[in-house]
Length: 237
View 1 (cartoon, rainbow, N blue to C red):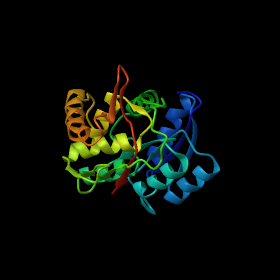
View 2: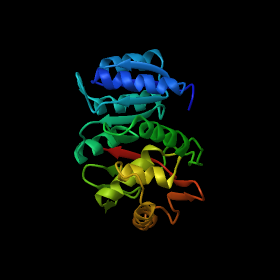
View 3: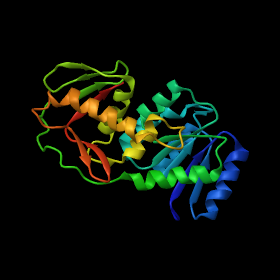
């Protein structure tokens, strides 16, 4: 991943300095900041390829800024939350806002770099054919209530895990997400991902959605690559 740009937004100056030195060895161009305001300013100046940030910065929670970054800069950069402590509510908030993954502070820099390399190879910018009619009715996911409103205005109840998988597919509509990447988003702290559980969740979602999609499966399987969502969707958080 040499020659990629990396923005570090960490409260701990010693940790930030250590990571700065480590990643420079591998050819990364590094910028370091300590506040959300500085993150925002750096994005305006030159958006990085990767953002590594604390969960909590002096001027607020980092995930407060993620939706704005995603809206303005799309799916670049990869966003990694590098957190000392992160409960399930914080993880869901970060994922909902646009974070790619979590890495705990006790992880070695090499593990952090491995996550970055995996994100770069698994979030493939491959196009999926999407209907051209923008007036086509869309799906609406209420992430907080775990419900899905169909294009025919019917309500479908989801489990929390089903809502999380569907959220990721909706957010990345028009792209292919690998099975490993989706599984990692479900269980970010597991080093070995359970893709069989993901496949079960996708099968359940297909069964719930197919009857409301004119017989067409809105979740596509791409052999040896992963899953992708085909259609129009909105998310209510």
